[in-house]
Image (cartoon, rainbow, N blue to C red):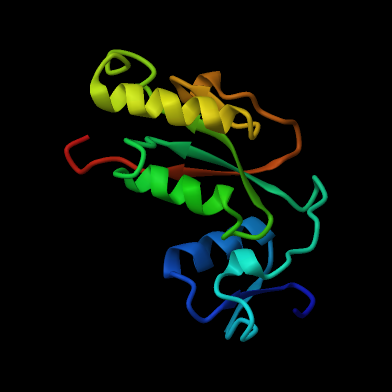
Length: 147
């Protein structure tokens, strides 16, 4: 890993590679092969992040767990696929509002409870997201075409 450069494994998806670059604040991205003993980026130890190195990620329009692309991208960041990024908030107006009592809304609520234990805030609007002064933040907006 060079100065000002973020390295990601060759098998990394383009989305994760782009998000890793944005989250790191680097000016260059190096794509390479992970060590042969590693099966995924989660198996490769990452250096501990200081709060100044971290990029807060807000997932806006998360969708249904195990079905929505916003949920999947949140899962990728939460599981450590993006070095220096951390999901700090999920904005989901439908499942935290009128859709809360629907079967998908109940699945969302169950997932949200588990993620709150990891420090993720759940909000029904962007205006309700707690903002940390001076923290780098990336809003990942995911919605359906019809929205």
